[in-house]
Length: 125
Image (cartoon, rainbow, N blue to C red):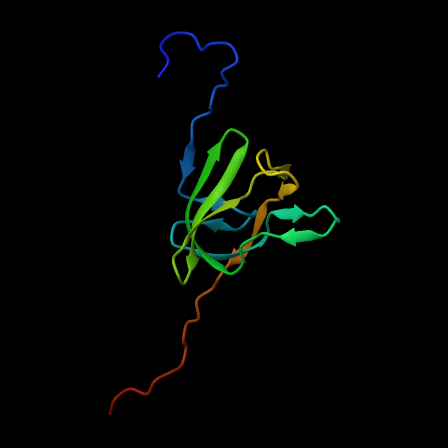
């Protein structure tokens, strides 16, 4: 921890903000425990111009939404195995660490509805 003024050349790191909900459309909101699907994701471009998809697919369970400055991401668990994943939802940028990697944002396509049985049962006689 630096006491006093910040030395020149040292960048200030914005504070991490976490939220318990994420609004992915005008009518759709995710809250902890909601299952959802995504599209989009990062792409790696090879030297010959071919693009390799490097993204997650399937169902996820929402944990929380985080922001730090311009960086925005969702923290979720993959359904059903429970693996922890971080899904970038900020703007599309080139990766600062890996050349030829484009950090395209994931888009939440919607919640997964659970099937409910509406079958009528006969009352016992």
